[in-house]
Length: 123
Image (tube, rainbow, N blue to C red; front, side, top):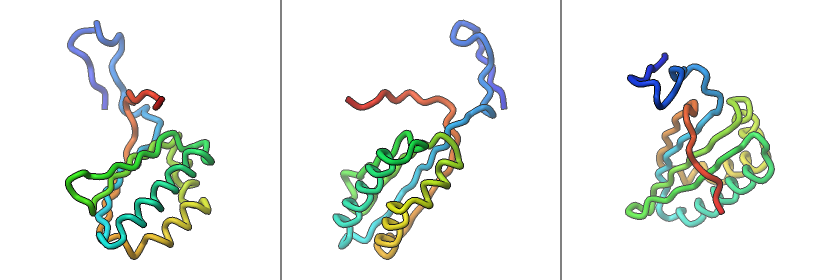
């Protein structure tokens, strides 16, 4: 799909969404409240190890809903779908998966292509 701007002042060429290369994982977890603290420690460890040891992992953000202590949202960006597939085979991910599976009440995952990323590195 191609989108054309009405004026060429913002862009000289149309955006081509088929050229998006980065791979995004957006996941919403509902956690058994009795295991929420344990889950948070495990997911934060998984995220940190992913960022530190996986060159294909560009972003791995863990977000907590301040109004619902049973919900956790993840936003991950990988260089490619293959990098995400590699992530799922790492020791830290497999350990995380094994540890938390019974604590998850519901999980919704969306796999996307990043069209435009505007995040700046954290300082």
